[in-house]
Length: 116
Length: 207
Image 1: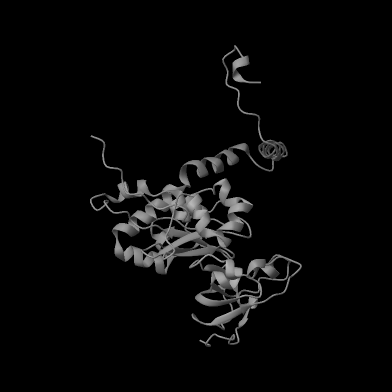
Image 2: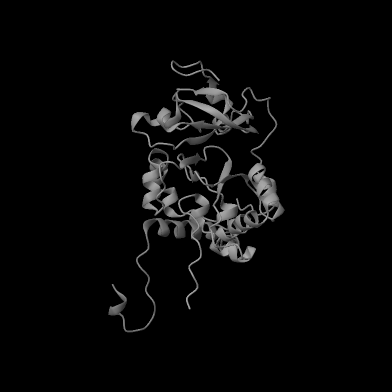
């Protein structure tokens, strides 16, 4: 529990190669899973952009339920405030979330947006 | 019962909260059942009070302010850079405030926090209010903390939803050019490293 030594966390584990690269547009899943998840409700079914590829990390959604570590890629995903909160969003206030690849799918070009 | 009612000179504390009573009951039960030694609890509490605290993060920030190569490493590889100063146990991402960009850290799902660098989180950081409003109306929240940023400044919110922890590298205030690394570290506050404050320039010395 008390870790003040130089040890790193054990959460970072080898896993499959990442499917996305920085700049990819993604859409988060909109499921409402029964068990543990780290995809907050406010960010479900939302469009975002891959900001950073963090590497592979233990997947809490399975690990918390005794279904194994199932380590796989984790990303920092940037969401524009208007994509999360609509017209009443504050200007210039993007939110970054650390999300596992299984929460994400490639975004199809939305109307009015050029695919990147 | 107030202290004024007592003539016998010893100190009476405020009534304990339910939470604090529950923690004490749990602790004495664990000690009684020999599951935990009370010295071990004291050592952990002592470590959080003396060894683990915002002064560690402040050292990292001050080093980044005086050493551009260190700063570059800190922003690119936070975990490795803090290990160099003897801190660890965390996968760290450092985000830099600069003209036009202000960063702010929250954990909307629970209360993830870079303990190794800034100690125990303040109560407000764990509150439902901060956790829900920091992502929804960060400018209003920042104004309530006394940080009024023009709309031209982008506010980047970092919601610590996985195992990485976030630390804000505040901007070095003007007027600190002649200060030593140790003097700079003294100016860096916990709130500035969470991103709900900026580091203020030193007050002119009173003469």
